[in-house]
Image 1 (cartoon, helix red, strand yellow):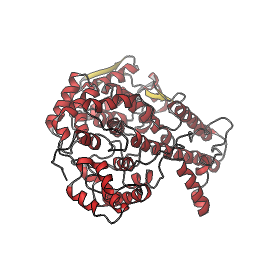
Image 2 (cartoon, helix red, strand yellow):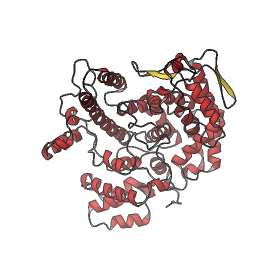
Image 3 (cartoon, one colour):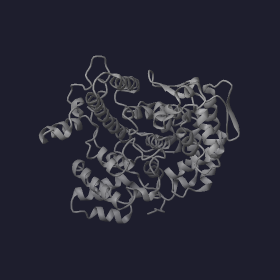
Image 4 (tube, one colour):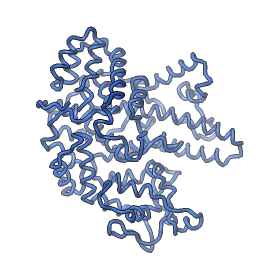
Length: 508
């Protein structure tokens, strides 16, 4: 369904470029107000990671040290596995609370365009909590400190921050990449890992099929050798002893020399950021994300022109997108992805914020000298026992205690997003989640969305009139047949469900 009628600026702003209407939140009045959300959003502290960025970085350092102590310790293998399992379960519990806070960040933020852009860039520079035992704690930190502050910066700044963050280095195995002829590589018999080099060219900058060769991939990986991170600070560092000696050509430009330094890979990143092929690749991805699976070439060209003329200033690129007439036409060309859909529904229902959520860092007790692997408070001990060994009543109480620590009960927040195929911070590959319409609008998706819509309507909708709810939620995007069907609903819950399950609501 592509809706060809003209919609108001406010409606298109909220539905296409944001996460939908929310009671008490005024829509932007013009394009500058929409762009202003990016500036404001980048300066604000997100709800995740729980406990804050500085505390989380310290917790991650302590977790890594704890795992190393267990690995090097004298305990038997069964004891080591049990201790590692206890920490891993606690990390999983912490991840769930961070993911819930990530959902809440999108629901409660008045800066919908910024939140959508943050999600776009997290997907563009994809990493996953599933990579290893530490990543459930590291990935929320990655989004909070590498991605979100740089959404409105120059692309080169964002590229540097994402590429050199420990989450990316861990995810793409850069810490396992050694120059074959480097001092450390020769001594330990270690070799090159091309993962980061390949994804840097194929996904993060130039794009597949843009003319680079396998030799460019290998040379990029060579230039990146030496780039790693310090586990004692969780910050990037350059190790000359790991870097491949000599100069290496990427796209005809030489990097390195007799003495290798961090200037080599930083120059490479800056040159890739300035390459016109990078501008074309990323501008096209932005248009596909926001506007259409068949992006208008003239719109992409306008954005590329803004990119090149401003040295990759992303605010100028966003402005060029919003200035193009295609940005405000053909409502319904794109599907709301599962995360977007759930966020939009919770915003529409104006679900109350749980003031108890996010009050403590689930990881705080891990790694503290002399402390047990698990804390003793009710929420933190949820993961201490194998759920299969708990009696039903105890399991029910523990689940209720955990849900009470979240912004949203799991059955309306984290669980449906996962069932719909888009678990938070867990993309299927370095390419991220798909953007095309057919991936998110199909029979199984629609069945899950209908079930979720009914559950949310029954739980939160008792005070709503369906006809008023339809007007407040979709404004002038509501079609005549949807208005008629909702008006004829036999009861409130059915009427509200029909709004949340309408074609207009799952499109943008």
